[in-house]
Length: 592
Figure 1 (tube, rainbow, N blue to C red):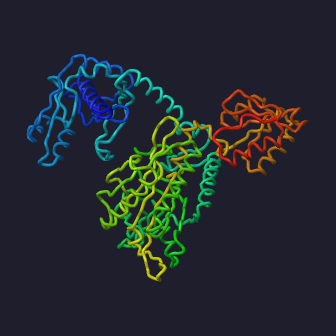
Figure 2: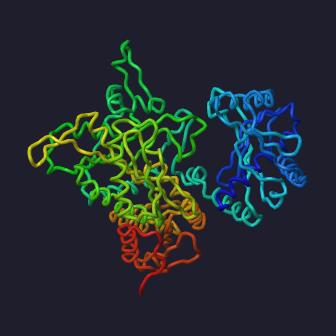
Figure 3: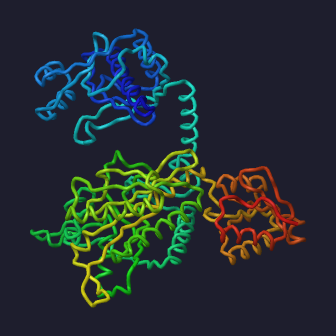
């Protein structure tokens, strides 16, 4: 059995042990147990219990699980009829609902653990609990969860458990979790005054002055790269009539994720939608003129605000929001240009990600069940993307996600790995033959005939907000010099050094270096501490000697190292160099 299969069986079996332990503690008549799957680092089980589970209960539940494992009970798989299953679980409302929802011809299986616990489950599981005796597990947390994710259904208590085959693996994972918690962007972001949220706009971040400086540094980098590759940036309305979204297919396929502004007309003709995506905007711009094949490819990038309606329980800092800016592009091109264009997009992807020291991989997502359009066009599009990935990475170096494409076309998804080894779904490249058909897009080919262009939907960062959240955690708030909100903090030792400090501040600003200075008469150490807390890369300290010799003394972020008496011109050149080259590491020495 492969490790992944082993972990699935191991963790899923432990979820039954968790359910059995909870039932023994609270009493069978007091417990409704729902579902208990394995997850990436363990498992969870959902319950309705007579009282909330709290941290004081964790050790009790863990000890009961270990007690059950020591009984070395057999696990028995049985096939039962629908009637027998309903009778067996007649006092369990969630199990009953699951059984009733199964197809009439579905094979129903149960697993008995010992003589006193039965669960509805497909399996597979261990044959005896002694196989789990060496299990290393620890309750992670308890949270609320709606039955079947529906906020109108029962609220359950979800008990999460970390589970690994050995104590060492669990220990290493807990260490990783601790480090991840210390990097939590929801904690670091407000500490560094980058962003905030307010209950009046759930899931819609306010960018604070420091955060907006960083946001714009990232956007400037993005724009610079795309300018070199022939992209043109556009901006478009935030709300548009429903008819636009009906034509695009979003109304039929994405209605629940849209904020709708109803009108007064009975036929709904004056209903507007707050845009959840940018693609129809680029199409409207394309349709403004009749284009020649010589104009293609036409690349319309857009970083407007978009809104998507999310369930409140799914919102998660900058990672899952209802308002964000996506680094969108929609490119219109001829079929014979597809390979070269997507190859160029992959080059851009490499440049952007590698600037942050991040590695990535590509996955091909194919036709979903709710696809729109001609299956033949889908086959054609999927073959085109597959051939591009084979040529770029080799046949064995990308994965295929069957049925995970957008409703209008297949896509290449880009996942990125951060410094903790966590993978993030980031950019996407979607090949679309359908929307050009829906909107009757055309171009004039070399024979003066009307042809239909192909459309590429493409984002590399994805949501700027989400990408910044990932960067906050990746760098633990200590960003590379070029994207730090403020790059230099200036500390005049006494007020008589303020004039030299102001001169330096002006020179740095002239060289597009973001700088903040403290001209108060506070203690020098207090000023330095304040800038350190905000993680400014360089803090320069100015006293009599520096003012006389026109030098600076530099405190480097993250170290006790200081660079003494650095010529002012040299320091400015250092800063300009890091902004230009967008290096990850700070320059920490000065050549004589």
